[in-house]
Amino acid sequence: MRAFRRIGRLAPQFTEGIRVTLLLALLATLGRIVVPVVIEAVLDHGLRGGHAHLGEIRDEVLLGAAAILLTAVSAVAMNARLFRATESGLAHLRVLTFRHVHDLSMLHQQAERRGGLTSRVTSDVDTVSVFMQFSGIFLVTASGQLVVATILMFVYSWQLALLVLLSFVPLGVMSRRLQPTLSAAYGEVRRRVGEMLGAIGESVVGAPTIRAYAVEGRTAERIDAAVEATRRTQYDAQRLAVGVYLGGESGAALANCFVVVVGVLLGIGGHLSLGRLVAFLFLVTLFVNPVSVMADALNEAQNALAAFARVLDVLDTPTDVADPGEAGTPLPPGPLGARFEGVRFAYPSGPEILHGIDLELAPRTRVAVVGETGGGKTTLAKLLTRLMDPSAGTVSLGGVPLPAVPFSSLRQRVVVVPQDGFLFDTTIADNVAYGRDGITDEEVAAAFRALGLGRWLAGLADGVRTRVGERGEALSVGERQLVALARAYVADPDLLVLDEATSAVDPATEARIASALEALTRGRTSVTVAHRLSTAEAADEVLVVEGGEVVQRGTHAELLAEGGTYGRLHAAWDAQRTAVG
Image 1: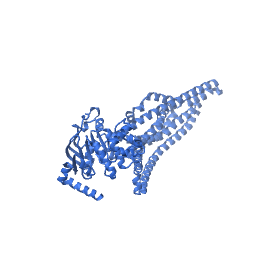
Image 2: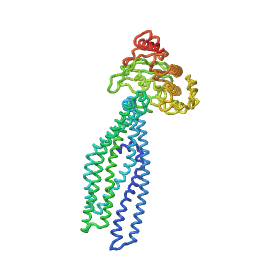
Image 3: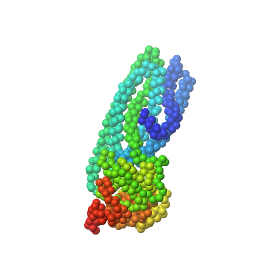
């Protein structure tokens, strides 16, 4: 019940109009006792004295028929209202979870497999949905049916009613003892399902690599292992559930035996009329059916609660990179400079990556950040865009500490172009429009022309209406990056952070990207994580990061004359370029 109350608080749509729905459930439940009541009235009153009193029988039957019709209408209305409420509530819960996933820092998202996070928004919420719409509805009506049937059984024969309740005492004891074990078993089921979906998702996304390295067999074995682990945990959980179900069936058989034997004895002794005995047998059915099926429904509830617990794990994860919202301070207008003051950073349970960085970047400066892999270049860029927060120290833009800047202001003024140039499965125009809402196709084409990419765009069969495929795979790596640069251009940021994308492209595309970058970075502050030192040669200032510290700083010419780490990196790069040429 605590879990369901938590669901109600998270998604209030579940409880909207609940009083009317419960009233309809009560009417639907009361209608189910009409049949035994009518039977008792007909046998004990309509057939009294050895004669059939047709008028009374007719009245009883018509009254019962009217009550049954009201029951049917109430049940339909109740189910319709519950379906609407649960669909609305679950949609809200799914959106809430999805948005919270996007609010989590890059650190948390990198720590958990994407498939696992996706399964919580999809598979786990679907499990809650199935329970709420089917087993959950049954639990509502069955609980009411049990209460009404129990009350009426005590009215007809308290002796038989006690025997029926005693028949189900073993089931109650068993259910209570098995509940923690069932909960743990279904929690393991949900975890395994998440792992299975993650393995399948990775194999689909990584299909080209799997084919290229001919590891289909190894991949199939990995997926088979995940599927088998899921099957095994589900089997173990269902084996426990079957025990509870058999307990319900045993209780039902025992209750019917008690009623038949003891009821006949009470009837012979004159303590129970024939009508009441027959009606009581119908009441036992009304009591037993919900108990038998409720055992299964409660098992489904354990599965749903395990799924909901996984959803709560996401929702309860604090957003360590929190949005100050309206309480924050927007970035000041105009060009943006950046400052790092005593910035340190360490990944959870890992060594420190950055060691006390003190750095100031002037507005409208093109800065290239170079260094060997693992030196801290990308971490520096992520801190600058607040994809992560430093472990210590402060990063500021325009004099405002980043934790105080609302995301709405930060994302409008600061744009990141990652190395992979991720594109959505739609057209070039729609992908560019992610940079500025409401942009027209002509404005998109103008952006490509401004970046010197007009001829490339004209060479596409459908121009800006060209579809790029899933993750942009209909385009080459370099072409995806051209679209990403156009997207950044239309966003018109004051600070541009780029993870240079010319390391895996052909010379012609590299020339196009270099020309586009020249136009894109002109007049604005830009920080480029440079993998090829040609970018550093064209920058206003170069930062050399090594071992988590800025070890050199200056123009390309100054650093080349100075030698040191930059001189060594440039010499190695130049030798490689000469060898390739």
